[in-house]
Image (cartoon, rainbow, N blue to C red; front, side, top):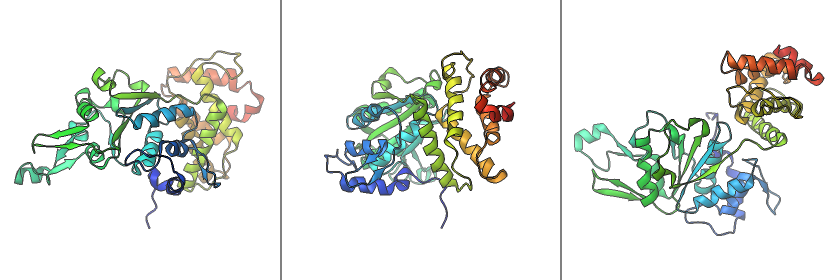
Length: 356
């Protein structure tokens, strides 16, 4: 049997979704697999009355997740906005898995995307041979979601050209997708909605028109509020990735994760943890996702070129690569941080030596 590198959320967490569905007695919107309460429980985690534990998929402000879920029960679409690495794609995938049992109805936004990614395309061999027919029609993920009453996902909405974005307006306002070539239309079945993601750094690339903005309810996913929250997120995701990749390394010590998170948070905020010194910030986002990547890369080094225990030397290369994106400006910021902060912390002597 072929080993899948990363299963879809609905497959990876199938046991949790099944148990929640069995336990869930609250009202469910039409074509939803779970009630809004159970969807929130699946995303935020918790323990059912029968003792079954639901692992948290999102660690942060619970109210934001509740607002996102409530939006999907209305006629407005959901836009998850935030800086890169705040878990927008992760949350959208798990919302689709919990609500529709299918997270694969996905449109990947790119600068070269055409209207067919939103509306429909054609099998040109069939189109030339027989003209426009239902058999020649190639349905987009949006069209398939409308027809099945499921959630569709649009990744990086602001990367899509503005004229293509506007193809969503009729879909979101009229809940209809006309097919003039066939004299037909697809009308959305109850349960259909759209979850889009966009990041703050892309503002100005292809801004949404005011008409399209009105059809979305925007939920901003922030960076973790506290260091402990961010450490927990990194620890959980690193453990999941290590298991999926079968890395022959010990789970990283909590202190190593804490050091990476502290460095990222201090450089992001421009202030040391104790508030005594101001710092320059690099051009990189230093998101939680990048912290996860640094720790995971360190584990791979420790597993394959070390003794299987994550140490400062294993983190060094990943830290530098994550922070120094601009070889001129960021190198100066990073070097200054090493000399004024890392060097002065006695407990970080090994890390300074590895990075110096």
